[in-house]
Length: 103
Image 1 (tube, rainbow, N blue to C red):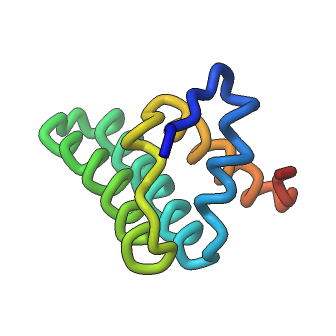
Image 2 (image 1 turned 135 degrees about the vertical axis):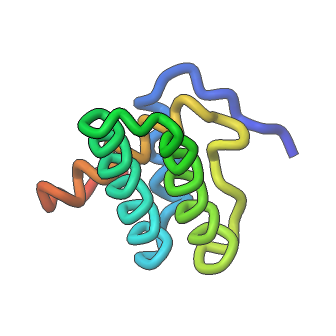
């Protein structure tokens, strides 16, 4: 099976959304992203740089749990790390402002 090469994020995002149909999976993404922000700002305020190791643990850990346990697929980040990173934040933005993303 050939892997599609996306040339732009706009092309990739509908694929990204198709990999996040399960609401629990999406919820785990939101939780992980929120915790990333909490840790990031906590580190900025306290200067406890050793806590930065929590960012990838929270950011990827919750998302990958959602994919493997609930969505039953492989995270898109393995093939498209930058687009997946952007997709996580755009999906969370849509959740926060309560706009259903277009497919």
